[in-house]
Image (cartoon, rainbow, N blue to C red; front, side, top):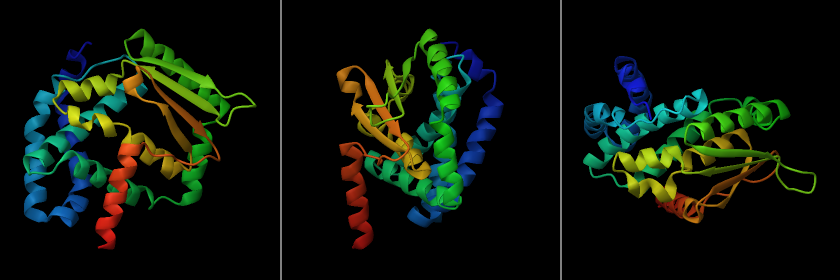
Length: 233
């Protein structure tokens, strides 16, 4: 999928990885200590050139930005794995870190962002994004909720570009948790998010609402309970 698009930007992407790792440095050190954190970051940088070779390009700015973010997260995952940190710990670390970072943003601003995301105008934009992504291989349909529905927007995806990318770089164990970032951000914005079908069914379907509750997928919910138990102990 035109991977040369990213290879032409390799220097820029490597700089963006450095900025991402600098942002993660403090939480890494707090959780794992300075020596281990530095080793994780060094190894993440080492893996990044190979990851760039696998990055798909969808000619859709929103989705391509997600792939770039995913590439950084996969580099970090590989760095953490080299230090003996498994997938559940990786996911828990990311959710906790994102929660801590978003909590610094005033809650009213986050709620405004959530309302804007589900607004009629943004939904119209997302429908166009979905059509563009579909035309380039990441099948996406955005549907408005009706009066009788308990959601404002439903998103259905097939042949998920992110999941395929994750698999292409050898991180298939992330599959049961691959939506953790979506749910973390929905939680931060006060958007109700429910996954009503998973990739195992052939289609991932998500429903979003202003006033609903974020219903974490079962695999992530179990992981978060373990994380809470750790803190309590």
